[in-house]
Image (cartoon, rainbow, N blue to C red; front, top):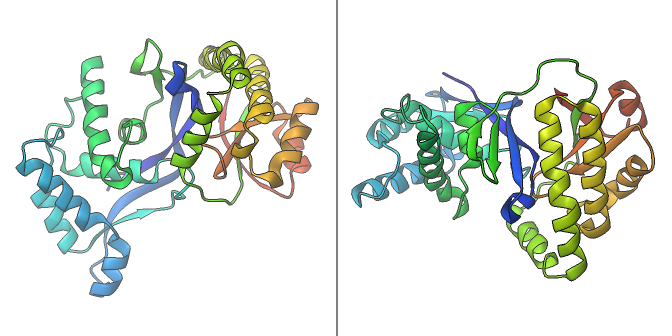
Length: 307
């Protein structure tokens, strides 16, 4: 069956809720797919399927009430579960890279009816995002729909601002810089971190820095990335990381703060928050990945995209 990749929010963490743009891309480094495991005992199957039967119940409930936005063949989904269907995934949970988004994309991709036509226009993408958000809300209570949208379409998406949600093309020329992920090894929950950010926004100093430094730097970083200007992306990530280090240290695990500061002080690499922060991955950029790997030899660095 088809693979559904993880999702990486390159730019726009937290600030997209304040009016900046955001850029999300598929992250095929991690993915999930459906497979059958009929050899499992009932207890083993229940452990592997986790919340899937409850998800089928949730979809049935919405369908019976006439509220389900996606047209899902939940009976076929439930039948497959009874036959030993599981979702094999190496997407880390608690990292903000779309573990539940890939699962929801997989349900829609295999049991959605009329799915090939739904994203034929901008309106279709907006409606698809809403439908997937409703499905993912089963796991989180609320969902923007961004993660399953990117996982399903497997295309880069420009989000927020005047764009709303649209597919964009990434540059494919004159690569000068490597964007990488630094694995903190720390799982985290996004909701308390989002609440922390919003609470910080009540402070005059941070609110002003957001409006006049952080949001413009995010939008400029996205524009530079889409234009293929690696050096300017490097400079804008420095600006984003500097503001985050000054005001949002709770989003940066303490063990990694000296490494972050080292990046700010030098010209080899820069780091910024990836997703909600607080753990998961840090996102970095460098013009010399080999030298950066040597400088950060104690950490697991994953190259993901060039610009």
